[in-house]
Amino acid sequence: MTSRPDLRHPAARAFGWLALIGVALGVGIGLFAAGGLTATGVTSADLPPLAAPTSEPTTAPTPTPTPTPEPEAEDQGPKPKLTPVAGNRAAPGERFDIVGVLPTADKGAQLQIQVKDGDGPWDDFPVTVAAGDGGRFETKIYTSRTGERKFRVTDKSSGDSTPDITVTIG
Image (cartoon, rainbow, N blue to C red; front, side, top):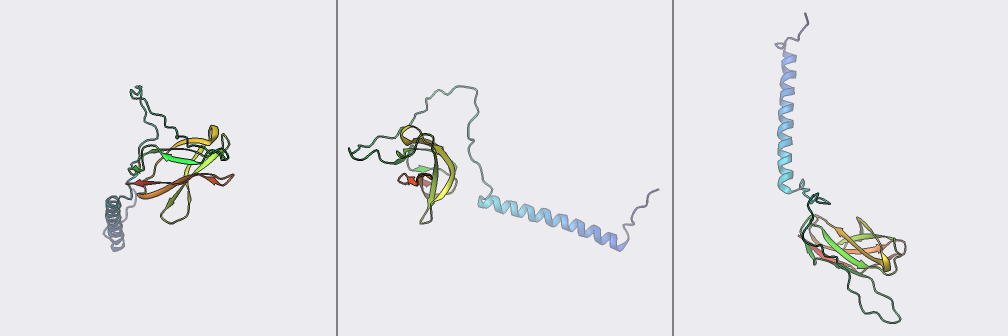
């Protein structure tokens, strides 16, 4: 025969009630906090997938954007350039393409995407892209932070950068 605590004992009853109250408070506070975070959008990380899995071929061809060449002066080489392919607006979490050229970058050089908000400093964006022939590059980026954001591409080994572009997110 096993001994069982007498639940009629005042200390055992008090411990049982405290445990029950603790569970109820934990559940209530957790639900309240989850509702508050959801209402403020803090938990919304509904980003589109990086690659949409599909077994069917796409019917519409994807355009391949190329930067438009600028007229070159005889004593100057090509100029750095950065262009957003679909315009200067994107929805939060929407991918957008940027293409450009950083003529001083060697083929295969790792170029760092940088972002600037307002008058703040340039920060490294978590995207790099390899330079192609002539320093040409193309990449997709996305951000869920809204507002006007400036982007540029920098070759950290040489310190050369493209001119910045402003993209309005939201």
